[in-house]
Image (cartoon, rainbow, N blue to C red; front, side):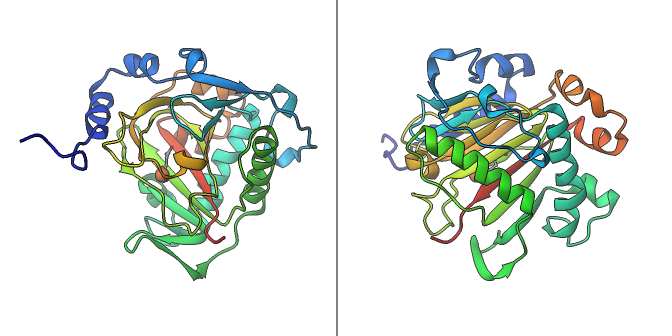
Length: 284
Ligand SMILES: O=C(O)CCC(=O)C(=O)O
Ligand SMILES: [Fe+2]
C-alpha cells in the first residue's frame, strides 16, 4: 500500500542528509547568494533612514536584500552588521538576555548555567508546554531589539510588499556545534499569516531548512546562515516547516570578531556556538 500524501514526509530525509554530511559539503550544498545566485532575486532598497549607532548596522546603502525564489515569502538580508555590531549583539544575548529573563536554565543564570543555556524568551514569554503566549506573562522587550526590528522591517517593507510587524516576543536560541532544532512551524501567534517573523544569526554558521506548510508538500531547501545574516518569513513562508539540522564551525568567525578578541568572555562562549534571535508579533 502506498503512503497517503498526509503521511509522506519529504522533510526528515533532507534533515538526516545534512546531519550526516561533511562540514565542507554542507557549506557548498546549502544555498547562499554567492554559491547559488540563480535562487535569489535582488530587491533594490529604496529607503534611507538615519541609523542609531547602538544598532551596530552598516549604512543601508551597502545592504543587499533578496527574495528567495525557492520559498514564496522568504527574504534574505546577508549580514548588514559591522563586526563591532555583531559583537555587541552576542554580548547582549549573553550578558543581558540570558540573565534577565526566562531561560531554559531558570530565571537567574550564572556563568556555569550559561554554558548549558538553550533558550531565553523576551517580551511575551512563550509557554513551551502548552505552545501559547499568555497576556499576563510579559517582560519589557529590550529597547535596542525593538529598534533593530523596526529598522529592518521599515527597510524590507518599503522595498517589497511585506507588511510591518511590532516586536512583541523574542526567542533567543543558543546552539552548541552538535545542537539541532527539529522541524516545526511557528503558528502560536494570533496573526501568524499576516505578521512576519524576523530571525538574526550570530556566531557559527547553520544549515537552515525550509519546506512547505506540510512535510509532504515539498522537499525543504537548505540555506546557509552565517554571522549577521537576517531572514524574514512572511506570506506563505511564515507557516512553513523549518529546522536547523546542522551548526557549522565557521573559519571566518575569528576574523569577523577579531577586533574584539580581548573580550575573553564573549569569545570563549561564541567560538563554538551559534546564537539565533527571532522576533514575532503575538497579538494583532
Ligand atoms: O535558529 C534558527 O535559525 C531558527 C530558530 C527557530 O526556528 C525558532 O526559534 O522558532
Ligand atoms: Fe521557528
